[in-house]
Every structure is written in C-alpha cells, then in structure tokens.
Length: 366
Ligand SMILES: Nc1ncnc2c1ncn2[C@@H]1O[C@H](COP(=O)(O)OS(=O)(=O)O)[C@@H](OP(=O)(O)O)[C@H]1O
Image (cartoon, rainbow, N blue to C red):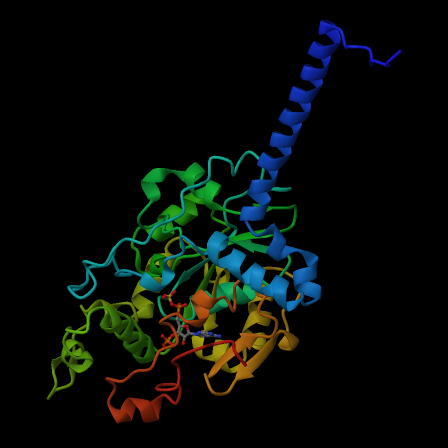
C-alpha cells in the first residue's frame, strides 16, 4: 500500500499562512529599517573606515555609494550670490540657480541607526571661497562630529521652513557627538546672527577667512567659469582705475569686508564664541588649524598631522586615506571647480599668490 502523507487540515493551512505572512512582514520591516542607515553613510562612518583601509574593490564601491547617496543633492560648488542679504551690486550672480537642499526623507525619522537628530551646536558660517568645504570634510574625520553634507541655507533662504525642517536635515548623533553644518553665505546675511541666536545662544560659530583679494578672485573665477562673457575682474573691481578707487558694492569685494559683517555677529554673540580659521593656514598647516578647531569645539585632538599629506603638484593638503575622509577625496570634490586655474589673472597676482595657476585638477590622486 502506497504511503500518502497526511493532508493538513484547513485550520492547519490557515495557521501556516498566518506564520508566513508574519515572517514576510518582519522581513519587509527589516529591509525598510536598513535603507535609512545605509543611505546616510553609516557604512562610511564605520570604525573600519577610520582605522583601516578597505580593499580596493570595496573602496570603489564605497566611492560609488558616496556619489550616489551622500552627495547627490550637494550643490555647494554652484553657490549663488552669497550676499543675498547684503546690499550688493550682484548682476553677475543674480540669475544663478538656487542650490537644492535635500528634502528630509520620509523614512529618515523612522529608522536611521542609533541616536537622534539635533540642531547644530556648531556652524561654519563663512566665508564663501574661504576653504569651508575643506574644513568641513577634514572635521568629518573626527568620530565626535557628524555633519550634513549639503549646505542647508536655513538661516538665509529656508528660514520659513521652520526649525523642525532644519533639524530633520541633520544626521543622527549619539550622546557627546556634535552636529555641524556649513553655509558660507550666513556670514554676510544680515538676519543670520539673530536667527542663529534665537535657535541657541550657545551655538559655536566658525569663520574661515582668507585674504580678501584672493577670495574675490576665487569667487570671480567661479562665476567666470559659468559665464565667460562677464567683464574683466579689474573692470568690476575698480570704479576708477587711475585713482584706484574700488567698487565695494560688488559682491566679490563686499563679502571680503569682514569687519563690517562681523559687527552684525557681535551684536548677538561674544567674540569667544566665534573662531576664525585661516584659509591660508588650512592649506599650509591643516593639522594646526584643525587642532585649534577641535579645541574650540571642546573635542579631543584626534585629527592630527598623520591624517594629511601635501600634494605638491596641486598645492593642497589632502586626507591620507580618502575613504576615512568620508567624502574628502570624493570625485565631486576632486574634480570640482574649486581647484581651478586663474587664466585671466594678471601676472602680478600670480607673483603675489603662489598658489594661483597651479590649483586646477585632482586634489587627492597622489
Ligand atoms: N585642503 C584643501 N583642499 C581644497 N581646497 C582647499 C583646501 N584648503 C583650502 N581650499 C580652498 O577652498 C576654496 C574653496 O572654498 P570653499 O570651500 O569655502 O568654497 S565654497 O564657498 O563652498 O564654494 C578653494 O579656493 P580656490 O582654489 O581659490 O577656488 C581652495 O583653494
């Protein structure tokens, strides 16, 4: 007689179906939970990134991940007129597109790894073309700093969206970690000091300052790369070339009148709460400047000399392990217009600023 297995009763079948649907639900839930952390760089912030270099294949995959996940909405190289709040004759920059700020993901507050989103305790408020991107990327090496990659432009352009919108843009932090962002145009935005102070009077402010002439040239070069037809730097700078009278209403010059903008900040923040980082020293002695920043933020000096090498050809310091930099050597940064030449410059500027003319190209390929 042939053996025929006992057929499950309809009740038993129902039970099985129920168990299966519960398992399916759990599986979907786990998958759903995983998307948050993966898309906000937990992978890249893992201890292994900091402590040991991953294999080349993995490196490529990670770089690829970086480009698709972390940097896709970053528009910091397309910075429009930084002096939107300031009265400036900025015909050159006025029709530039608004940079996109990543919309908070609907899933981001649901599951995004451990910790919680906090409003920034420290902000790099300026100055445009000072070296703010390099500083933020260097700081991101520190395990106690979490920073948003894109410029939120909350205190100048997106203030009406409210603090919850702003908070939601931030990465999650654990107890003791500092949340940071950088938006260089805050420094020249009249309303920014009052607004930041209203968020928290304890906010630490960092300003990367750079020789105002070099800064203006860098600013102009960025515009020139997008609008090759603009008047020459000299004709925009001088009201009268014979007398040497400068047109301070031009935004490229206006941004560099640091003392004027600083006055606004000092109405709301004491000097001890503002740290000035030298854009020049960020290139000549990055570890030294980073030491000062870490002290200012009350953090252990973890970022030191050993994190940097100097690329002589390019004239820039670079983080030794690109992947540890969490974007520091990302192709976007490497190929960005930040490292450009200054073909329009008169030779006397080239003589004054030895970095000019050698800046174009790849920052990190040693
Ligand atoms: N380590 C390192 N690597 C790369 N670039 C560095 C670094 N340190 C400072 N810089 C200078 O940063 C200048 C760009 O400044 P920002 O990042 O503030 O620009 S932006 O306002 O965000 O567009 C950019 O200016 P220009 O090269 O004159 O365009 C760089 O010279």
